[in-house]
Image (cartoon, rainbow, N blue to C red; front, side, top):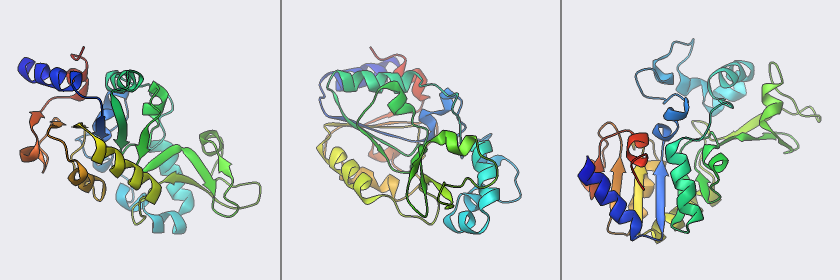
Length: 239
C-alpha cells in the first residue's frame, strides 16, 4: 500500500492536467449511501426497485410516489465534503487539475471549492419547471409536499438524469475534452458498470491510468496503477 501511495504521489507531482473520474464511492464517506453496496439503495425494500422509481416513465406516471422516494433517499443536504473532495479542490487551486467528471448528483465537489466539474447525471441543486422552464432551488423541493409545483402550475423536475433519459450533450462534450487533454487520469469510487459514463475512459490518451476502488472493476487490467482501498484512506495519505 505504501509503495502504491508513493507511486501515486509521484504521478500527481509531475502532472499538470489531472482528470478525476468518480462515482458513488467518493461520497459514501460523507454519509451518502452507495447504490450497489450491501447497505445501498438497491438492497433496501420498497414497493418498486429504485431503478424503476428513478426512471423517466415512472416520474411521469407516478410523480407523487417518485417525490416521496426522492425526498427520502436522494437528498442529503447535511453531507459535507470529505478528504477526497478537499484534496481535489486543492489540486484545482494549485492549477494541477483539468477537471472532475462525476456520476454523483450531490454537489459536494462544488461545495469543496471545485469549479471544473462535469456532472454527468445532473444535480439535486438544480430543478426546473417542465412547463415554463423556470429554475427552482433544492429548497423548493424540500419545503413542498406531494408534487412540487411552479407558480405557473407546471410540475417541477430535478435536473437529474433518470433511467431512460440521455446525458446532456454539452456536459458529455466537456468531459470528453477534459479526459482527452489529461496527462493523468484517476478513477475512483466507481464500479465502472454504468454506461455510457464508464465508456468515457476510452478517450484518455495519457500514459498513467490510476484506478482506486474497493472492489474489482471491468477496467482493472487496463490500470497502470491499481489500488483496491477506500478513497479516503488513499487521498488521506497524499501530501
